[in-house]
Image (cartoon, rainbow, N blue to C red; front, side, top):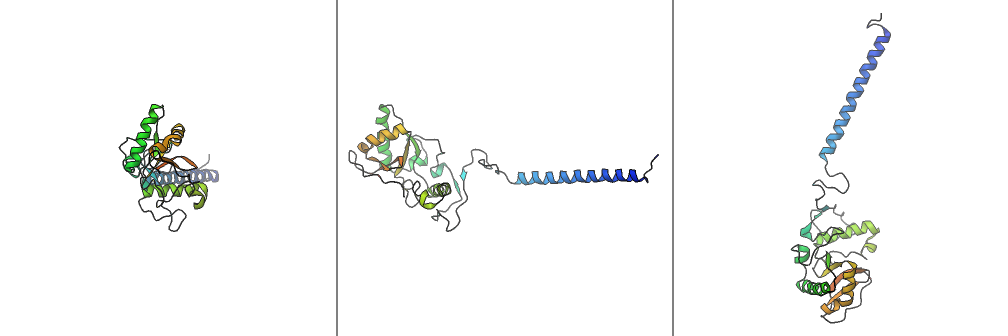
Length: 220
């Protein structure tokens, strides 16, 4: 019979103690990782700390970085900034800043055109209207990341200082059948497509019944 002084017995006891120590260490590491995750909500890509309804956020660009126009703010834009989620749209009669802060003459002309287009079975959907300067800056920053340079990004997104969305004098309309209708009849209401590469972007650029100016190649 072996006793606790037996070498085999001692080796087994050491092995058991080592296994227990390793198990405790593993549990401690797991608890630490769970605590860190709980202290940092919103780490999952595309979902903020407040869930799927959290307004979009973006880190403000570093001073002097491409796309930085000096726009200030807390890095969060929502409906009060004219934000409309990508792929969604609103009505010309919705009581939201993207509509209510549009230039009154532009809004009236677009509503008149929409009423006549409806008689032809065409529905106007607003995909963008008035935007705050902060929202416009975030769009530009995102475009710089997407296209790789400020020069290329500027072909599609204006600076806050140069955008007529910020002044309320531009509106984006969809879908494509509505854009086609406006391209043919918009000048009857003074509405003109501004950029050749943006068939959805319209501004009040002439008198009703007048001739639209030649389109610019792009927003740059």
